Length: 68
Image (cartoon, rainbow, N blue to C red):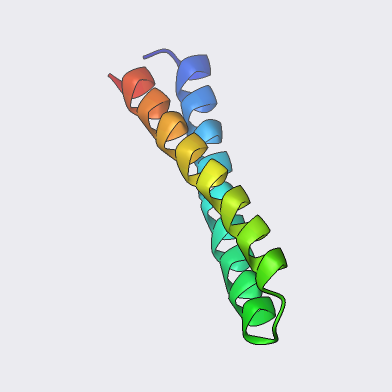
């Protein structure tokens, strides 16, 4: 892998790690909101978390393919 490709893959991996951290924070906030009675907001946030999970899996797979 050349230097530019390596930098690109490393950068994508850092973005993925940021996405995972944001997902964890959003989940914590969503649970906090749910415990205070805002179930509809919690369910909406959980839908967003599902999208983040799906995208994270695709990004992770792409990173693995680029590293080959």
